Structures are given as structure tokens and as C-alpha cells.
Image 1 (cartoon, rainbow, N blue to C red):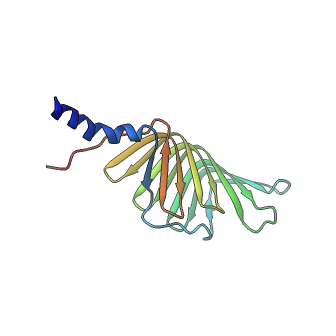
Image 2: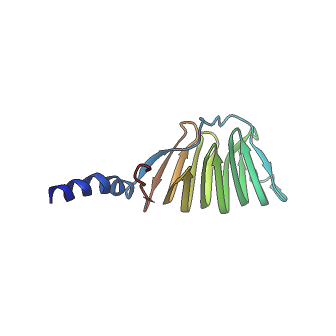
Image 3: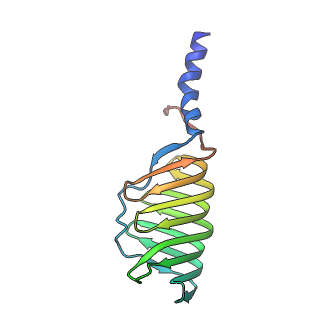
Length: 160
């Protein structure tokens, strides 16, 4: 019985902690949010009155080593037009940084502080490992991500 309890504590405790939230690495380098942001899309609509632009159709956004793709992205410019304040991606979002990839239904990227919040059926793939959750917040400057809301993964025993 003691061996069964030890087995349970050893192998189930990490899974229980994942259910409440998990801090993981994301990307292979720290992202510099001061780098230029390159956007490609099929269409662009600009609204000078509220400092926004809407990119639609196969939108791909690149900044340094990071790539974000989505069907629709709203770009909100700073009030003084000196740069991008935030990006709001909708309709199924994929973020790639180094060997890591994440996807979800929508994402908001605050360019100034380098934080990306990915929401809705989030899937993070890191090599052979995969994690799912309701929400993931990526700190591009630190190269980390925090996953919350029904975090789930399968822990594989060491290879044979």
C-alpha cells in the first residue's frame, strides 16, 4: 500500500499542479519588442479617426524571431502615431517562436510590454510535448508562458 501511495504522489502530483496553472518556457530566445513589426495580408482598411488598421486574409505578422498568423488582425496605433500600441488577432491564431508553437481562438499582443494573451482552446507544442489550456500569457521578453484554466498534458516516462 505504501508503494502505491508513493507512486500516486510521485506521478499524479505534477498533473494536479498543472490543473491550476503552469509556467513554461516559450521560444528559444528573448523577444525584443522594440524591433519593427512586419505585416502581410490580403486586405487592409485604415481608420485615421481612431488610429486603427484592420488586416484581413492570411495575415502574417513578424517581429524578430516570432511569427503570428490569423485571418483578421486589428492594429491599434499609439496616439502620437509613433508605433504600434497593440495587436488584436481573431478567428484562429497561431504563434511561432523558435521550435515552439501555440494556437488559440484569439490573441492580444501589447507591443510595449511584450505580453501576448492567447485565449480559447489553447494548444502549446514544444517538441514531443503538448499542453492544452483555456488561456496562455506569453512574456516575450522573458521567453516564458503561463498557462491557466484546465491545463492538461500527458507526462511520458523516460524513453526505453
